[in-house]
Amino acid sequence: MSENKGLVIVFTGNGKGKTTAALGMALRAWGQGMKILMLQFIKGGWVYGELLASGKLAGLEIRQMGEGFIRGGGQQEEVHRQAARIAVEEARVEIASGRWDMVVLDEIVYALGYNLLEEQDLLDLIDIKPAGLHLVLTGRNAPQSVIDRADLVTEMKEVKHPYRQGIKAQKGVEF
Amino acid sequence: MSENKGLVIVFTGNGKGKTTAALGMALRAWGQGMKILMLQFIKGGWVYGELLASGKLAGLEIRQMGEGFIRGGGQQEEVHRQAARIAVEEARVEIASGRWDMVVLDEIVYALGYNLLEEQDLLDLIDIKPAGLHLVLTGRNAPQSVIDRADLVTEMKEVKHPYRQGIKAQKGVEF
Picture 1 (tube, helix red, strand yellow):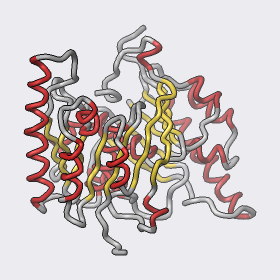
Picture 2 (cartoon, rainbow over the protein chains, first blue to last red):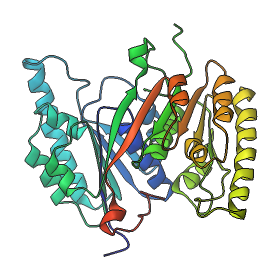
Picture 3 (cartoon, chains in turn yellow, red):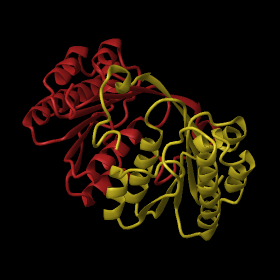
Picture 4 (spheres, rainbow over the protein chains, first blue to last red):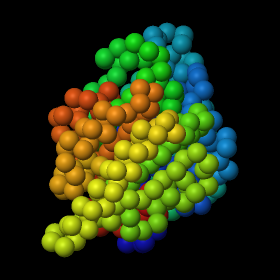
């Protein structure tokens, strides 16, 4: 077994901390001088602290691909599906490019749950990964096929959530 | 309920991603222009990517207080306990100082589990928190008293871990 193996890492579950852990992983890798690309498959509507941060950090790039949180279906769903197709294609190009030490596909598993992409699309992305690349996938309800291909899987379980206690989303924490 | 409320956030459980999520939260807050202090209660022995990163980021400060991972007991345990006492005292001063928007006490809950500090020490730190300060606590086996005082609690559950498959710790992921 090689010392330098790119891992497939999955953060799943219904609790807060999946995207946040992926960000933390990106920061740690950035600290090691690595080049990191984060593609956000779902978020897109508002300005996140991580976007502000990445604008200041050479070597950590975050691109919002998705169309904001998914509500309702119909016509809007087709817009989301189109955005997901473009994001998958971009992920494919970037993963294969050899330009990155770590690629984070944020909320790709969530997009899968909304049928915005096929399970096979995601498995294909894992399969084309260069040996040294760390690939981080986030989103609730990771299917078994993804878990089977992963080296590290953590389930984030919600124990207590501030929204349920009537506390609004806080700057620096949720965005 | 105020719009700007400092939250008490707990990342617990046996899975990987607790410190990593705290780091991600620090990066997000940093992106928002906040000032963040992270005190590491346990780690201390080796150079982490997050330490390298924080050295390059004005406004995000990480201090290693602890004595490395805990092995064995006896004399070494007293060294750990002494380090924990100093860390608690430093946390108390910094939390009360008003200099920070977010304070992360990394692995403080883990240190609690090793009886390096008293549960009451931790509860006191929560109680003195200024209203606007976000306080992030990590470590496995958070006691109910801590969960009761928290606004957001996520349990990181291990689903799959690379060590169990004979894969060594990887740069940019684990350190």
